[in-house]
Image (cartoon, rainbow, N blue to C red; front, top):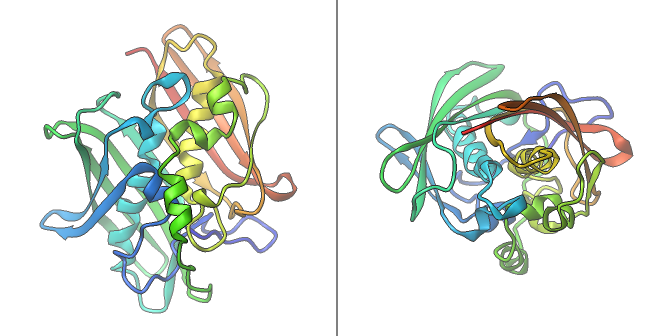
Length: 283
């Protein structure tokens, strides 16, 4: 999703959905990475699915809760997108996912259903449920989206080579080299810019920032005993795709059974693009 930046934090946050001709035309690098597809309006709301496979693996080789970021971000935004007032854009201010059933998840696909809770001229609220291949509830999600006047350029088409390259990545790659080496515990994690993380408008997709923030917290877990129970992220400004993203992790609490991390993603000039709270618990 493109992200707004006028030199100060955007009032609505960072995750602008642009103005695609059709809501179904949403396959880019992030969706190819996590095999997110199958958009359709369903009887209970907007439906979108994600295939289960090794692309969900994060730091330590275990499936990453952060991998739900693209699926949740897209399915929460689309029902508001189609209901928004004419001549407007959406920017996601807050995205939250609560885990009901920790990974690994049963495939072959996870199915997400998103519905509008409320919408007016200024904002939209939506929620979603995600179930596994057996119909068990995996996670719930919610989003707060701001509605702003249109005026940004239409997203560019995604190159086929970008989609192919994205399909070779996994959740751990949202942390760059640190995702494979296990580095980053206690120090900033610098993620080089990658076209595969873009949304077609020159910005990092909000779901990628969600995944990177969750994975940065997982990498900071000193003993790896905990699993992520929830992630809430606030988008402040766009993360330009041309610049590296730096994740800074601040442990707010590290106990034997629960831990809470504050993860700040910084872009150009060291300015914060998003701030996430990641809660991890013993399961």
